[in-house]
Length: 253
Image 1 (cartoon, rainbow, N blue to C red):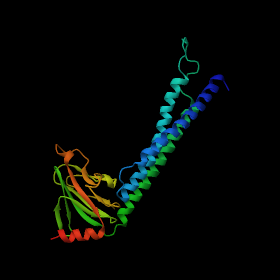
Image 2 (cartoon, one colour):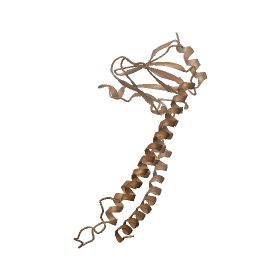
Image 3 (cartoon, one colour):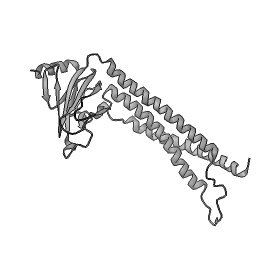
């Protein structure tokens, strides 16, 4: 082994040590941050939270590797005082490292396509396919408000959304004007509401609460739709199935 290659091997070994130390520190900080995850209020939110958590762990590991390489190289290969000659061990590339990084990139991207990509989508679509008789809620968006109707329950054009916990809901989305986006942060997923289209979003709430108790439980337009976009919100209340039946009885015509 030549002296130049030997030094590159030693440098690579040093980088691995730096990466492991940085990884322990960064993943520890990440674990603390993920412990304070925002409210997960639906089955769909749990699926997306699991996917996001997995990708965060992975991103931190890669960030530490790339950032650690830069920091390590600054100190490991810095020019010493009085050193005016050309770099002794600088190379434009090192084939083993290039092949390793290329291989890892392919493996990581293929793995992410399978999980959380295909697996997560299969879980979300599975909920929709298994919902034989979901609660149907018509959602109408317009600048800059939301209105909700429950066709089977005989409730129309209410300005607040009331849903039962533990029941899959089929939100039927329409807009009277421009494009909007239906989003309840606690429920983890959202969907664009497009002019001249009827779109569906399936949600299964798992946490009781309301906008008053937690601002994450609110309808929020998440697509800029004009001057009133920031205030395009609607209150939400998630209640027990028994309480929902009482609410329906008191509000239906």
